[in-house]
Image (cartoon, rainbow, N blue to C red):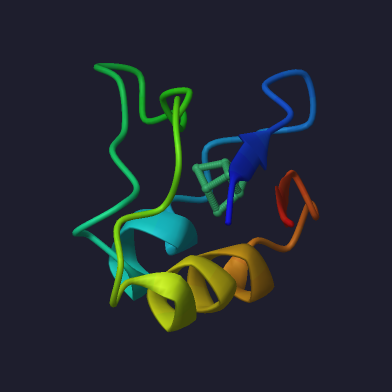
Length: 62
Ligand code: F3S
């Protein structure tokens, strides 16, 4: 499973980091930092939760 964060769609709501802080981190301005690589085993649901939490639909998991 991979996560893609569309940075141009991120408005800094920070709900992704609130829903799944083990995966999503924010930069100093409160925008989601890009994620590289595969979602670690056991964090698949956290990835989905973070994606669902984003009101801008900036996060996709596949
Ligand atoms: Fe950005 Fe959505 Fe997270 S707007 S900070 S990716 S909740």
